[in-house]
Image (tube, rainbow, N blue to C red; front, side):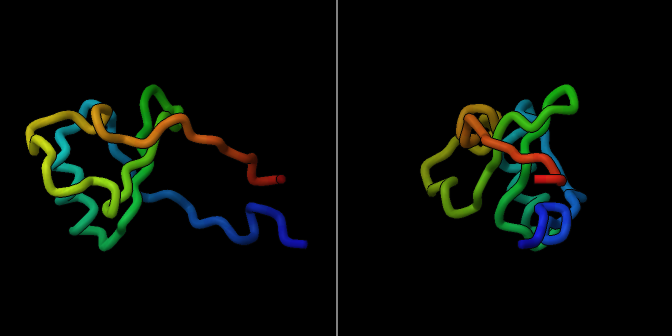
Length: 78
């Protein structure tokens, strides 16, 4: 059985929960990603998935308003 560290991808792109939704959508499009980790004070606090954003959001709204939480994590040695 492989460990998490053998199959995980290193995170290169993250967003803040206080970022605007529209700026994070642009960041996701520019990096060709459909899921982005939301990090606050060095801790993963949520994720934002492109297919969960929907059409009726306030583009000036904050990511924390629509991010998915809580997030369950595992360590790279699991």
